[in-house]
Length: 287
Length: 316
Image (cartoon, rainbow over all chains, first blue to last red; front, side):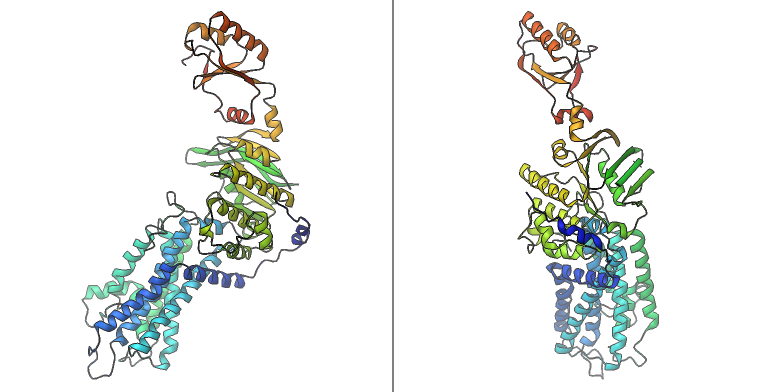
C-alpha cells in the first residue's frame, strides 16, 4: 500500500505563483537543446554532415585558382555557403522532422494538457533552433578559418551575425510550418529534403551560380529564401565586395518567408497525432 | 461542493452522436467513474472537460470554469493522464518531472511523486528503458506533479496484466488519501468497484445507470441466473420451446448454454427439473447463481445475453 503524507497538502494549497514567462521560455530552449543533444542522429546530420561536405570540398578544390590575381582560398566561396546549409539543417529540417515525431508520439498532446502557453513551446523550439544553428555554423567557420584559409574582415562580423540570426529565426519558423503541414513523422524527412535540397542547388549553397546563371535558375533561386540567406551571409566574406556587407533587401526577403512560416505554423499547428500515426512512428526513419 | 458539473452535454462527429444528452456531477474529493464499452463516448466527455474538444450543446463547469473557454490558468489546476501520450525518450524520469513541474504555479516534490506512483529509485532512468507499466506510472506522475485539484484518468489500466492493474489500483487509492477529486474512465467493472465512490454507466453517449458500485449491483439482488445444457435434446424442438416459454424468467442461449434470468428461481427450477425427468433428458452443468457485477454490467450495456429464446419461439 502506498503511504502518502497528507499533512503537507495544506501548505501546498496556500499559494499559486505562476512561473515567469521569460523563465519558462529559457527553460523550454534548454529543454529542446537537451532533446537535440540526446538524439545522436539529429546531432550527426546537423553538426557533422556539413563538416564532411567542407572536408570534401576542401579536397576537391585544393589549389584551384578561383580568383585570378587575388590571394584567395577557394574555401572563401564555399565555406560560408556550407555554414548556411548547416544552419538551415539545424532549423528547418531538424525542427520540421523533430516536432512531427514528437507529435506522432503523443508528446505534444501531453504538453497541450499542461499550463505551458503554446507560444512558449514554439518559442522554445525556435530559440533552440537558433542556438543549435549558431553552434553548427561556428564549428564550420572555425574549421574553415583554421584549416582552409577562410578570412573575414572584422568590420563585417556584426553584419554576418545579424544576417545569420534573421536567417535562422526565419528558417526555424519555416520548420514549424513544415511540422504543421507534415502528415506524420514518416513523411516529414521526405518533405524536408524534397523542399530543401533542390532549392539548395540553385541557392549558392553547394555551388556558386553567381556568374551568369540561366535566367530561370536565377529566378527559381530568387523566389525562395535560401539564396537570399546564402548571398547575404556570403557578402560578409566576399573578397570583391566593396559596399557594405549589410543587405537589407535580402534580409527583408528572408523575413517575409519567416513571417509566412509563422502564419502557417500558428494557423495549421496540430497537437494530436494524425490517425494512423503510431506512437513510435517515424523514430527509426529520421532521415 | 461540486467540482465537476455536466448538464445535457452533446457532441456529434458527423452523423454519429458520440455524446447524447449526458449529465452528472462530481463532488470535491470524490472518485467518480465513467464506465462503458469502447466507443461509448467516455473519452469524448473527458476531452471536453479538459478543454481540448468543443461541445455541440450543454453546460460544463469544472472548478467553476467553462473548460471550453478557460485558458492556461485552468490547466494549472487540473491534471490529465491520457490514454496515449508519449514521453520524451531522451529524458530521465526525474528530468521529465522537473521539466513539466516547472510549468505549474504549484508543484509536488519530485521524490514524493516518485514514491506515490511506485517509481522510487527509478528517477534517473531514461524513459525509453522503462517497461510499459512503468511508463504508465510516469504518465500518472506527470499528471500529479502540478498538485492538481482535479485529476482526469482516461482508462488508467487498459492493456495491463492483472498484477500491474492491482498495483495501479493501489496507487489510485493512495491518491484518494490526498483528497484529489478524480474523474476516471474505465471499461472494467471490477476496477470501478474497487476505486470509485460513484459510477455512471455510459452506453451510446448516454448514462444508463448511476450510483455507488453497491447500488448498481443491488439492482440485480432479486434476480437469479440458472444455467444448464440440454445435450440430448434438440433446443429448437417444439416441446423445449414450450417449456422454456412457461418459465417466469427470460431465457437466452449462449454457446449451447441456456441461461434463465429469473425472479422466481424456486418455481422455475422445479419446472425445469420436472420436465427433464419427464422427458428423460439430463440438465448438464446445472447451476443457480446470483448475478456478478460483470453480469449486471454486461446486461446494462446490452451485451449480457446471447439470442433470446423460448419466448415467441424465434430462431435459435
